[in-house]
Image (cartoon, rainbow, N blue to C red):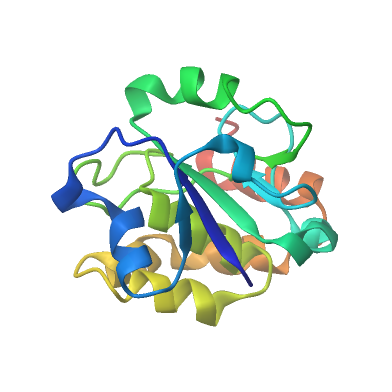
Amino acid sequence: MKILIYHAKQCAPAACTAAKLKKFELAKVFYTPGKIPRNSIVLSPFSDKVISREDTKYTKNGLVALDCSWKHAEEVFANVKKPLVQRALPLLVAANPVNYGKVSKLSTVEALASALYILGEAEQGELLLNKFKWGPGFINLNKALLKSYSKAEKAKDIINIQNEYFGGK
């Protein structure tokens, strides 16, 4: 699957997962939201709908992550003007060094890998994560959840799994 990242230039270059994915040619990185292709899935923590296998019909033009600071996420996502297919991720636990153990404070690579898992592209998700020392730890922390999420066909099924695991959070 084509991996695309809109980079808002807000992170420390040494810790930037998007830059590393670009370096290894595992993602195309661009610096203006106007380059987000229509009919692609944009991962957004502000979407009302969670990503699921029923969204594979939107993957033809790629899977898009917006790389920005969590402090400025609302502002960055508000600047994306096109009508796009935006999907949230279900709850998962971060393994990145900045937000280790925090629910839903995923790095860009963790978000992309999670979406790939859910969409049935686990091998590609692991390929992305394996470029980071802590990447395999993300899979280990979330193994049962990712496996369950990836078997769910519809968004409502994923929400049910999430609620069961996290106690209705």
